[in-house]
Image (cartoon, rainbow, N blue to C red; front, side, top):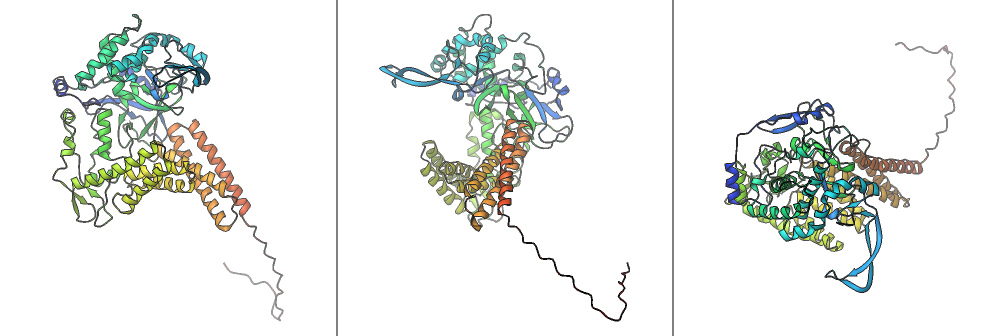
Length: 618
């Protein structure tokens, strides 16, 4: 996250003593010096600024059209997430080639079953010593050897150490990744070198990592003690010439936890530390930029919309189509700040956020019940000692309909929403259990109970998420027509929820467009054999919808990922296929119009008058 001047807290909350210690440590704010990072201004259209109000931040150097690249950064360190551990190369993050091996079969206790063997898929290239690093090729393994050798002995014991001290495994692996990168860095204090492409970019220097806010003062003492014990045992396994002091290891562990960017590359998950981006691109619930992961784990930041010169460049750390209070709590618990962006600061009655968890008026069936539920937080430390303070605000309060005089106690409104959330969770739990027919039944019943009976507003986030899941489930069950219908609802409501719920080129919208276009194209091909007038009408409609959706997918993907990106190429390929199918369909079904017979010339009547052709005056 950006190192703003806002106070921060730990994701697990802070003890009273930690909060009091943090208050005592408050010092006078100092405007940060941007000299170290100003090299980016010579290669990207940005201007770096600092102020008491915003801290460090990046602004547009000129008017920037949507899709403008404003930053390329390779991570100071990055790790493959636990769930993608053997699927990505730990050096370049390319997909790993798997090979099938035979090994003794193990029982539930991990003991070998005598005389039995089983087939297992393992990476073709991996470290045989620690068994904690996989690679896509021998070259990547060789190129990463120096950096990995620093970590290898400690990695081999990481699982055991993390379990013994109740510390997340990824926290320890992140520290080792930073130590490994530090060991191969010749000048730790060198200014970062910026470039306009992945090929030219260099990993951000380890020294820049220490510019980030660790938020350590808001972590409970017990959590710090567990982390210290785990890191002390782990550091003993790192060679003396590469080892860092325990205090520094704790510091960088806290920095990584507070400032990492969870990313998807090659459909797998990584977590990287990008100091420049974390320092200068602040969060907003109305962002004008987006960050995506490219080859080799590089972080690209592009504008999502046209940005006027001197405007601040912002990104988002949370899903935007969710209730305001949920966004704020997510940011509080994961990014350690209370969001006061323009969208979150606008009165709820005037904001698109009123629809996100909107409950319809039971009397007029049109308006949304409004309660300005969240007080502005002045002291985030006080809030974190008792986060239930937000819930206490609703006691004895009333929500009012935006279109009629109706009122309702906020506690009753919350009970309605809690009941909806419970039914929503039960339906989605069934998906995880693999019972798709039952999941579909429960979700369609959810729509009947809460939308058809006018309890939730049609743009309520829980309804939108239910339609999204219904689309996937129906597609998997083979009911593609219904899946198309549900996806269409999601797109229309996401775009039409009062405006400004998400940016026009929002990544999730792009995937909706892509999915909708793909399904429509497949259905059109499937139904093309029906040559009845009704069948031709359905085929034409699906082909037109496929073209329209894929045009939107191609447009948004160019903005998000770049004109030459693989994502844009995938959308263009499918779009060209849809256009071809449509043109061939029109050509095959268009009836040739019969030519009208030419009329015989009519002889002019003969009379005694002059036959001279009359002239017409102007």
